Length: 178
Image 1 (cartoon, rainbow, N blue to C red):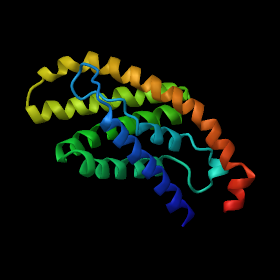
Image 2: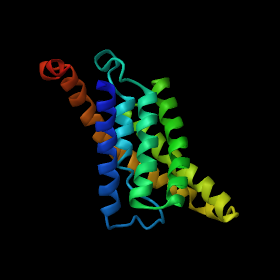
Image 3: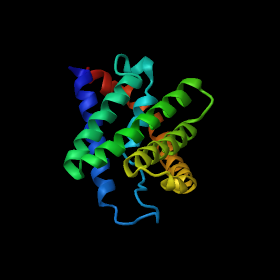
């Protein structure tokens, strides 16, 4: 029951961030480029302190929350094509972030950058298949730059939040809630 509530909380946060992102009016000058705010939740879940979080630790929870967030936010804020692109980006992004996290040779910022770049590459591959041309591949250098910048920004925010999250989970208030 506790794990379900915790995962629901993180899913709600991811949906809120997806909604906030849909309201941001500016464009980066490249079609389809966004900040990727909901990926902050994936990072937080990937960087859980397994000793303190216990059963609610690891990649499975991050994957579950991210998949549910994509489907729900797709139906709430966009359309079926957006879900398809988001799922493709999420698969690539999650695989890259998980590999970076498990290898332990990247900081949380590096893992976030890997995720941002891989997300954009996954989406461009789907775009190539949908429009049946490789010409959209010309976007790749711009998408790598955008994924690097947004990944750095989200990674820096996650680097600040993770210690607070770990500290709260180890606190007496949290332990009393058990």
